[in-house]
Length: 212
Image 1 (spheres, one colour):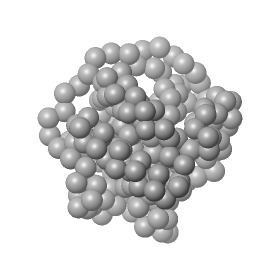
Image 2 (cartoon, rainbow, N blue to C red):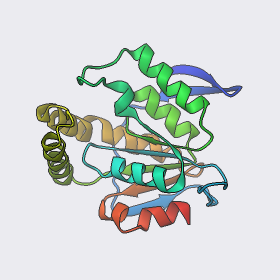
Image 3 (cartoon, rainbow, N blue to C red):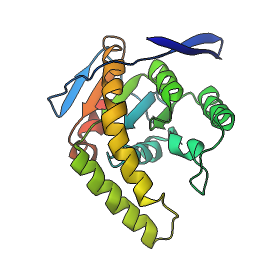
């Protein structure tokens, strides 16, 4: 591990470490491990801090937005603070300020996406539950392309499709193995859910395991 920074959040020092190592094979569709977590994330209930990370086209954003609306939880999509409306990268300073402001002012939250190594590590350390969405690359490409077509038809200014495809292959090859290893190191201290079948987002399996 390599230390990449320390930050003060609500009076606590959070040290962030980067992990560079091999992959971890996940065979089951869903693997929940780690500390017990007591439900109650709805309105007027206990707070919940949920971090969902995965490739483009892995179902994470659709589920995050749904859960945020249904359970009245603050939601941050990391892509929205990393990229501007023209799909040019925001400055690291601006992205960092927006990220830290969200963390500081939200007792319950859902953070969606990878962002960068620092955002990933802080989100993992502060989250109660970590969901890693890891479908096949075929599934990611298919869903990302479908989403892009829909956004294009609706004139929602989607990211260029070639950028989306490049990110999918880069993430699968270079980022996902490190995510598996980093999250695995947190087992025993966090509730961790690996999702290989995105239908589990749609059929209520993941929602029930978190909020019921």
